[in-house]
Length: 370
Ligand code: TRP
Image 1 (cartoon, rainbow, N blue to C red):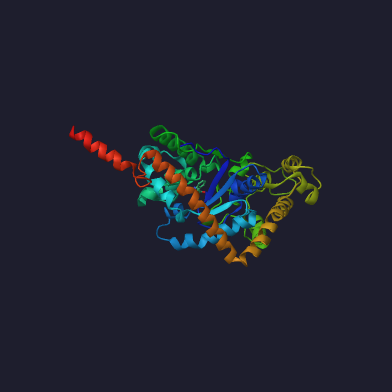
Image 2 (spheres, rainbow, N blue to C red):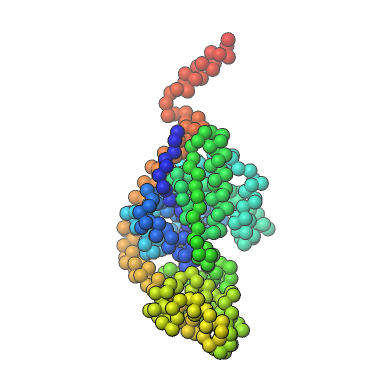
């Protein structure tokens, strides 16, 4: 059966905590832009609670609690439930069935080469403690997520590229073995390199809750200021304002690279026309870290204030948020069930779609007797 040729987006997050600026520049901001571009027939956003359980089996309460945090972050950042479907993974049984079939199309050797999973295994200490099979295989379940929606475009952060690669391999294998059934997806990652991988405020490679180096979308202004003034890594050699400053590894400038625009300069720091001029002054000497941090705070506040205000409104109406999730999940269930039916039909395991197989079996038995 021919799959649809519509432009369809599927993306998602594990609900393990509130979303931070890394999520925002790495994917959420882009999703809102894509949503509002009007270029897509469908936008689906999956709250990947099943995937979150693959390394939180002993703590389902944490996942349950964070579903509301993640949905509030989506809605506050501008995801519009009228344009985008927000749904919960565990309530979509078609995804489980697809995962089970796709498991047979990938080898354990291939799964162990996935660099993102490899790094996560290291980080979580699974190499010593034992690796949950579900965690090891989660890229297969992610392939099910993507293909179940017939996604053509998957907007994600850079760390997710191996998952899309693996999904494409599964699609190609499936279509080769069972005939053309699944849609081949493409990843869409931010063009700006710093947006692809925003470091923590301390300069560590990634924002992470356990390192305490995040700025969350739901942080108040005081907390944001504290993270910038108290923790943000700059240039340890830049002791006096007159000293030349270095940009490499300087988180204030990394964040400015990711977030500031020339308009921010005209509003808050009219001494410079753009970031290049500011950087040039910093490197020459004479521009203090305090000034740079204050500017960054203003830039971030311009982004965070409307998100914070929207969150305060949504927080007062959790009943509506619940309905948004339930409606989105119902819609997604319909869609993913259709894909599963198409997959089962391609595999010829759709035994109860009709009684054709009765004739087939009868003919088979008759032929065996001749
Ligand atoms: N693995 C993604 C993450 O950790 C979350 C995710 C689950 C996802 N299913 C997806 C992303 C499907 C894109 C498409 O952030």
